[in-house]
Image (cartoon, rainbow, N blue to C red; front, side):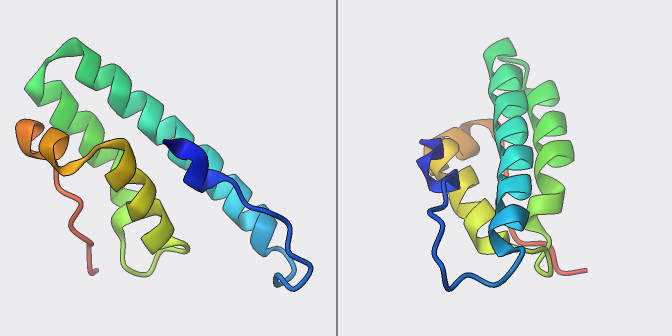
Length: 94
């Protein structure tokens, strides 16, 4: 499921791009793990709170790699899971 976080080293990538993605991927992995732990409690209030805290920075329209981050979150927490717990993947436009 988190296979989308892997990046092959292309020689044409902009300098620092791969490193930036690897750093972000680490944060996304931590986010997914925290949300999975919250879901395992079966406590809707806690799940929604953890979701908001963990995903807000990945849903900001101007964030680097926002589309890739949203895709990982969507694949990790499909629509039926998000609907069950009232979780939104809506992009935030500051």
